[in-house]
Structure formats: structure tokens, C-alpha cells
Image (cartoon, rainbow, N blue to C red; front, side):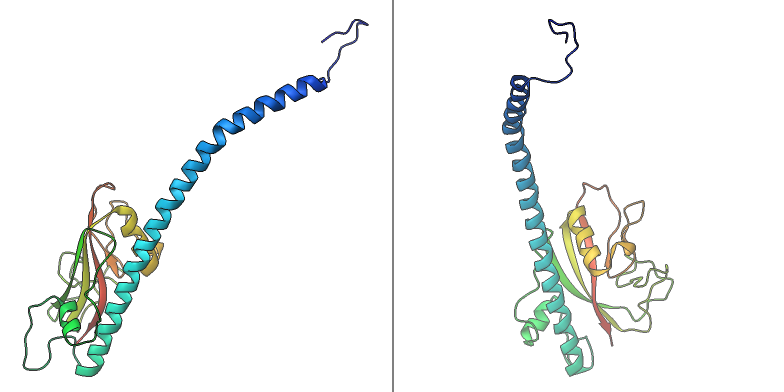
Length: 209
């Protein structure tokens, strides 16, 4: 801008600065509430997921403690001597007062706890193909050998995000899903499927005679 004296003026006038600031304030008033709303929504969604995952992890820990207590008393994870039970395993633990409520997973659509006879499994058994096979250390081989029983929780209809959250808490990201979406290592396993598909997640709880 050139003044009447012919000199070029590079500085803004106070009026111009105030005008620019006023425009910025107006834009901030329009944009910030929308950003805050999205952040709050994302925070609520994250908090809900964290609560569901935490509750499921607590239920799994209670189930494991009950199975171990039963093993300590009877020397076996299986039915007491002279009895057979086709009930879900958490029902057996509940009836024998090792557990105070049936296992319930807040993630997924439904769940069950089962006792599997794994006495015939070899180290070459394929995880999530041979019931009860688990590659616990991630070396590509089944680690459930020379055992009689495995207790596992099966959770159906689990979202990809919830499945990953369970895996990250129990196994760590290093034992997560591969490029095909299969997680066949660690305590938490599932067969791959599209990311938006619901998963059937198997979780190792206990093993022994």
C-alpha cells in the first residue's frame, strides 16, 4: 500500500488487525463446538469399550482362579471321581461353589466355557482347527501336549476392535493377528475374517490333568 507521501506501508493498521481477530473468533466459535462434540463422542465410545473389555477380563480371571482352585482340591480339571457332567464348565464350577456366578462376557453376543479332552493332541496339531490346541509362545507349534484337559472360554460375535483389545491385554500386540487376520498365537485366538465381520474368539483359561 502506498501513502500520500509516496512511501510503501507494510504494517497493518489497528483496525485491520481487529477485523482479522474478529473473523478468527467467529470461525473458532463455529468450529470448536463441532470438534469438542466429536472428541467427547469418541471418548464416550472408548470408555464404553474399555469398561466392557475390563469386565470380560475380570470374569476370565475369576474363571481361571476357580478352575485352579478346583484343580487344587480334586487334582483334576475334569469331573470329580465317579461322576460325569455334560454341563458347561462354569456351571460345574458354580455348582461346586468354586465360582459365584456363571461366566459372562460383556464383549460379543454370547459365550460359553467348555472342558476339552486334549490327551490325544500332538505338537503338530493346528491351532483353532484341533479343539484345545494353543500355540502359547508363538513358535508355530501346539503347546498343549501331555495334558488331559484344557478349559477354554469361547466368545461369539466379537468385533475386531474388542478381539484385539482382549489380545493386547492377555497376550500383547506381538502375539496379535497376522496379515490375513488370523490370530493363532497366545492365549487368545481366532480365525481370520474381514475386519468388519464378527469373530469367534477362543481363550485359554487353564490346562492340566
